[in-house]
Image 1 (cartoon, rainbow, N blue to C red):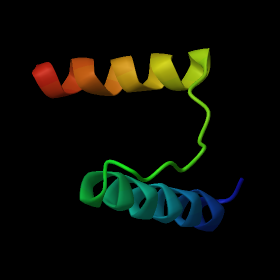
Image 2 (cartoon, helix red, strand yellow):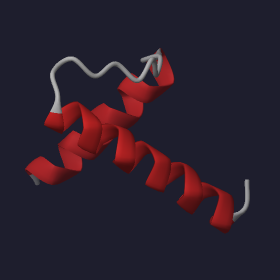
Image 3 (tube, one colour):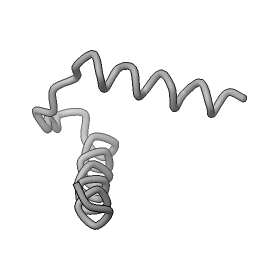
Length: 49
């Protein structure tokens, strides 16, 4: 993917996260897979430092 495509996907995910934050009934249908879990763990680890 190009930089522009990555930014567009990131913006899409931010909008989905906002909807999750606004409503506990919101379901985006995004799958959580092992790759995403690993990426989330890496980000959380960096935030803790």
